[in-house]
Image 1 (cartoon, rainbow, N blue to C red):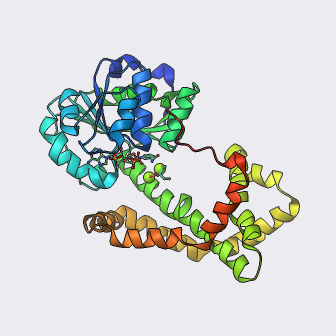
Image 2 (cartoon, rainbow, N blue to C red; image 1 turned 90 degrees about the vertical axis):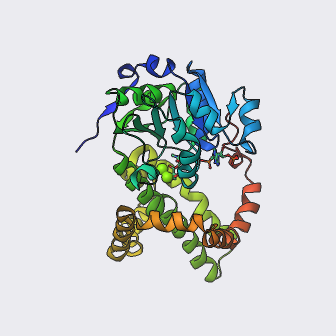
Length: 337
Ligand SMILES: NC(=O)C1=CN([C@@H]2O[C@H](COP(=O)(O)OP(=O)(O)OC[C@H]3O[C@@H](n4cnc5c(N)ncnc54)[C@H](OP(=O)(O)O)[C@@H]3O)[C@@H](O)[C@H]2O)C=CC1
Ligand SMILES: CC[C@](O)(C(C)=O)C(=O)O
Ligand SMILES: [Mg+2]
Ligand SMILES: [Mg+2]
């Protein structure tokens, strides 16, 4: 079934511009939403705890910063853009007491609603505006007069106009310039988790790292292995991004294309697909969410260990040296205010 897509001319900016929006959190997504809302004429207040590292940055960028409870009390629309694992506590302590009838609770990802970690009262709108890209790109595109596509969903429509309000918010951050795709909290959450685990983050890094190990263990130079397995991946992904898989195959040599078509399915075969299905099953059953919430509650011991192990893999040392030789690779995405 094809999704419905909405553009600028179908969204009414005045709906959100007539309300105060509290943006809770000022990280990757938070800074992008807050600055673009402000630039679109929407009254914005940032909610951050007293000791937050992000406070100074938001203030330097001319925004009003209050505690999450004060911001939630003042706002008509409350957008939670703090880490997913922190959201249920922020909600219970700072938002719920200030979430009076007629307000709207917004999310940038459906995790806490999909898994029942936050249960808003029936008399508020609950909606999602989730850009399909990192926050720094969302902001950069907005500043350039463009936008990153967004997913828009309504979980609870107390006012009868929750979708129109979500579209209005999407317009204010540039999302309807590129296209706002209507979805549900369930579809967004399950596909987002599956995508980042099996393909985008987990699948891609495992493929890159394993390829690097196979080449270096066979005696090839780590620098050459790095170029082949990591650096050139961007060039190939850019071709896929611009013209699909067929477009990429059109650009590479026939030798590469024959190797791709005959060897690729040996690397990712039916058994890989079966394990991907299991990853999806864990997302859909809530097993992954239970594991991640428990890991976070325990102080993230396994996550910290795995993060350290991954950061000390030889591919990182090789990459650091090689990236230092390539001036064009070092334009940090954080320079987007
Ligand atoms: N990263 C991305 O591009 C994408 C993220 N999303 C979703 O957007 C949401 C935000 O993610 P992301 O932007 O990556 O988050 P980040 O980790 O980049 O930023 C988190 C922000 O929340 C603040 N924060 C931490 N604890 C609290 C608290 N108790 N109360 C208020 N603020 C707090 C942090 O402040 P401090 O500086 O003090 O730590 C920081 O400003 C998530 O739901 C995520 O799934 C969706 C699409 C893409
Ligand atoms: C791919 C990772 C992501 O889902 C994203 C940037 O969309 C995330 O959770 O950060
Ligand atoms: Mg995502
Ligand atoms: Mg995600």
